[in-house]
Image 1 (tube, helix red, strand yellow):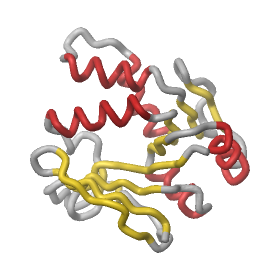
Image 2 (cartoon, one colour):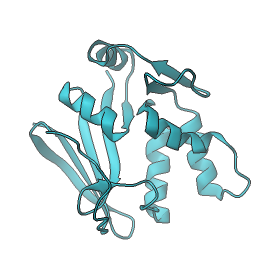
Image 3 (cartoon, helix red, strand yellow):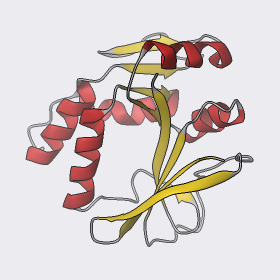
Image 4 (cartoon, one colour):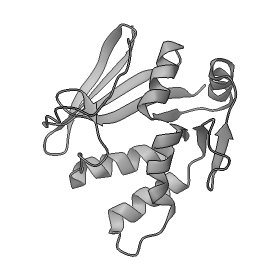
Length: 176
């Protein structure tokens, strides 16, 4: 059975912003390996639209960017959206009831399925469907923006912590 894992880069004051966190080479290598090992990705519309950047082969990419794009493009993606009418390669549009659809998805697969998008993660968390939360904590204070967590979380227990790259700490939590 697959596990749902929600992980994001987060500032010290609890905000996420995909443009504010440029990973150093070691952290980017970590994300390449993690993406290559994932079973697939479950995205909300907005995060999927951000990640579609990796569908296009950019001649200006370096070797690591090409490796990440290859890992990401090779994974199946499930996109939860009421407004999209189509999705790109290796992607399936999901409009079903998440409370019944997600457990069926988890039962059909093994490994880890990444959850992308704070709104989707909040919905899945309220339903008790996220198995692990990963916070990539950066030493930045953004002072505002989109919070990583919107709404209450279940009680969590720390699974692990590790330094990744020069100044990022990865914290992994599971529902208690």
